[in-house]
Structures are given as C-alpha cells and as structure tokens.
Length: 496
Image 1 (cartoon, rainbow, N blue to C red):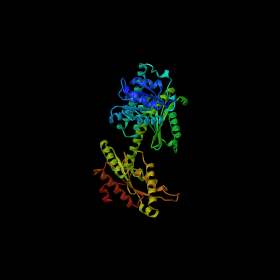
Image 2 (cartoon, rainbow, N blue to C red):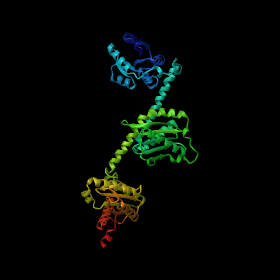
Image 3 (cartoon, rainbow, N blue to C red):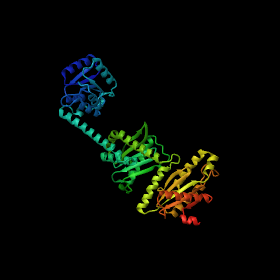
Image 4 (tube, one colour):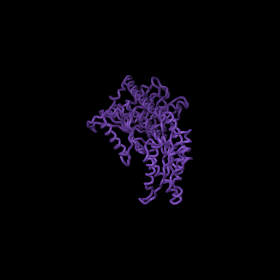
C-alpha cells in the first residue's frame, strides 16, 4: 500500500529520475508529466494527493499551472510544491503568490524533500475524492477540452478581480459609510441583477436600502422585514423595530400598486458583516427571480464578502472618528470648535442667499450651587439630560453645541429674532417644567437665554453676533434669571 499519489511535473529527465527514485523508495506512487498541459490533465484524471511542479516547463509554466489549480474549487486543496533551478527571491515570491504551499530549489537533500512532502500531505485540507466531479463532467481528455476549462477558470478570475476592484474603489470616491454602502449595493445589482439590496448596521440601528429598478412598495416592505429577521438571527437585539432608522436610496423607483406580495416568491442571499470577530451587520440581496438568482448571488457575495466588510467597517470607523472630533464627549452635542465652523458656514450662506438666522446663548441658572450641593457627577447628568431636552424642543435643522461649562449655543437657520424669541420661550418653559433628577419633587432648574440675529445694523462679523447674544444673556441674568432676552441696539440699550 502506497503512502500517497504524487504527480511530478518537470521536463528535465535527470531531475525526474532522481526525484522519482527518492519518492518511490519512501513508498509514494509517482506519476510524471513532461509539460504544463499534461500536468493539468493528469491532476483532473489521476487525482493525485500532492503535486510537485517545476517553474520552467513547455506549453504552460509552473506558475500558470499552480494558479489554475488553486483557482479551481475541485483542485484548490491539493498541496503544491514548486521547484526551481534558480535560488532567487523573486522566484520564491511569485511561486508563493500563485498559491503554492511550499517552494524548493533543485539540488535539495532527499530528506529535505521527504520532510516537506510529509508535512504538506499531513496538512492537506482535501479529505476525500468527493471534491472532484465525475470524469465525464470535467472534459479534459483532449487538449481543446482542457483549454476550455483553463479559459473558464481565467474568466472567473477576471470577473472576481473586476468586481473586487470596483468595490475597492468606492472608498476613494466617498468616506460617508451610507454612500459607500449605496455604491456597493449598486455594483452588486449590476453584477447580479437584483432590484433591492439592503444593509442593516446593528450599533447604528440603521437599515440602508437601495432600490435599483422599479419595484412595488409592498415588495420592499417584505424584503425589509426579511432583512430584520435575518439580522435578529445573527444576534441583533433592537430595542424597538419602529425606532430603526430607515435610509432609502432610489425611492423614485417605487411603484404604489397595492397588489399582494407573495413572500415565497422572493429569493434572497446574504452575508454577515464581521469585524474583529464580531458581527456588526448583515448585507442582503433580494429578487423575485427564480432560485438561480440566489445561487449566483451567494457565490458573488462569497467573493466580495471580506473586502466589502472591510470597506464598510473602515467607512463607519472614519465616520465615528469624525464625529468624535466634532462632538462634546459629555453631552453628545457639537463641541465649541466645531460650533464656530458651523456658525461661519451659516453666516456665509445667509450672506450669499440674503437670508436670516438667529443665535441663542443659553446658560443654566445657579449651576455652581447645584455642583456644590449635589456634586459634579450630578451636574454632569444634568448637562446630558438638558442636551437631550434641547434637541427634543428644536427643529432637526437647528444646531446645538456646548459652548463651555454650563452654556449652550444654538444656531437657528431661516429664523428671525422674533421667531427665535418664540422658540427660546418654549425651550425655557420646557426646562422649567422638567424634573431632571428624582420624582416629581426632584431636582429642577431654570435657564437664561440671550438672542441675536443676522442681518442687523452695525453687525460686522460672527464675533459681533456672539457678543450680542452674550450681552442679551447677561441682560436675562440681571432680570432675575429664567428669562429670554433679544439683543437691542446699543442706542436703545443706553436709553433704557
């Protein structure tokens, strides 16, 4: 009984004779191929346990044979040892890049060869011959059949490299993770033909949907439900499905017909998105095509899964880092530095479009006393709760920033001074009535608010706008606090 079947491919008869003798003496059965084409043919027809390839062979060289075998699902797990007569780093590099399991320079000691062969045979992932198709299915009995198989594998490799390059280029176009996901789903749609694709991100609580061709509202709803169920199967535990943020691209392709959608007619394929051994989301593609869609989609997702996961994770990380750079760590509002950038942008926008906007400066009354009485931890919790309360009483377009300490700055686009006063009074009242810590008799606070607006006489730049809002805030503090004051021009202030 032999220890295993080895295919030796080399056109040097002396090397073949010596190497065969070493292997057969050890108990291996050796078959010989004299060129690359014959080597490929014998791999498919003889099904060896290990292949030894010379780099320089007629018709097809060792690099090409190795690449072909490693790219074919039927032969990829057969160990391959590359042989060369030249001891050069470049030979070793390219040999290993083609997928070879080991690399040896000719002139080796017999025991060295046998050691490598034994090690590779033991570590082989190939368990049984069941990995091979039937001989009549692989069609390599003649050279033309073999060349067709080579072309099929090369075409598959071209397809894979093309789609991987397309997806890899997305990060150069945008660093917004939602746009990266949209671009990836569009590329997959071009390749697969599915009308709907989605990604669910667990930590963000977001379902990002891309619609690529006309489809009914009902179908999209069912696909989103399938996506949610799939995400839950991977351990996602949303607090409330209704609170999941739905970001949809391609809404103009939605059809409003009210025909029922048969869930059984929808086929899907998906992959989990994994980073640092943790599933952070899922990607799902869906169609009403027959089952062939799912098989093709699954194959494509296997090819692109790793790169796609890395791309989305990197975009999320960049977005997270960007948010950290502009966000106050305690209140999760914008920080002081970024507030000035946003104020500058709003100033320029108002100048360009001849529009109005207002600035509110809000300060907690007697905050030092709260810290002294209840402690700084209590003060921190109060600031966080106040930030949440402010956001809940303002428009989505309004900007809240922590200006410093217990003071907040709020930019109100397209808002006049009088309109800002109404908003500020609503905020002041909401704060006054809110219990921040404890039950109904717990800790309550009040705030004072100063307002300035653009445009206004004598207003030169944004520092003037801030100074005027600060002056108005000071007036509110002097007027027994818990007040809203709109800045008045200097002349009227002096005459008051």
